[in-house]
Image (cartoon, rainbow, N blue to C red; front, side, top):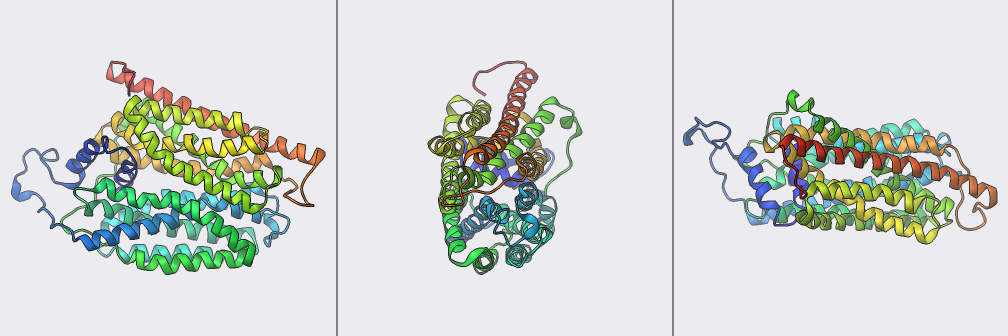
Length: 475
């Protein structure tokens, strides 16, 4: 199964039930069967046999495995803002990471970016490997090893090898096989199954942020990393051992891009919007904790709770945005989501006191969820189901690149600054004013990225209507 097919099934599950049947039917007709649409001259003897009904106990086990996998991968990805605050602080055990936000944030963005962009090498492995456990168990081991070895790091380049490369490659190998195979085992309740699994993403961020802070407070960063790595290994190996191909399904598919699509304006602006939105979307996740601690003088534990709050709200908002999209159109809702997320950054985060910053944490979590939930459905509408696999695969690779670039460039703008915090060490007077101005520059940069992304997706909306030869207010 390609990246496009995988993410289609992944995101579709968060949409309302009224939207799922049509899109899942289109997916099934093209990718899960050898139908007459693939070969009008084919006969029944040439088609793949209908697979036997999967056993209910295995379906239940697969749901639990997928839930815990998402819980770990997405949950740990969302925690790097907490690590960054510690790595760049004056008390950091990594001497060349102190006050170097740009270089430290690159560690996290490489790790999370590779989780998605790693599909370039993981998906071909899935199609060619009979025993998927070899991929997933290897991924769990590499991912856990990256976290554990990061605890022994004394130099910044150690983090690049461990918490960035090892973690990112391992998490991608852990993630994609389970997410590729699970939908194939649910013929009638695929949306429900994927919804159960995806619930792990919001719960993971909501639970792991305060848990990490407790570990940091009690044992320090070294043992916190080791405990999380060992926990991921102990839970991950049983989870990874569950996955297997469903007999009768061919998950390989064509991955070559149709060059006529590449030359279309809709494709170019869609890719540009994906890059800009991903780059802008990751900045609040990485600098929310630093702002709350250094500028607002919150404790690190409170900063972790704010990050958890944002993650939980974002997960719920994806479902709400799907319901709204049924009423006003998916492209319209996605444009509004990106536009409002950019405006919330500029209006609420810029020079924000405590009350307004909490409002930003909540509202940004609501608005930012729309783009992630609706992008695959708009790609299906614009390019058709027959081109969905290749277009969506490339778009999400671009989003991975955007995630890698966004936060480090924000760190360059932020530059070196004296860390504050609650208690005697908090900044005051001119020092606090200078730090606020640096964060305000980051906020402007972030807002420009998101508003530029809104312009791109808005222009795609107009180009699509032009190509269809008609305008519809609901699209």
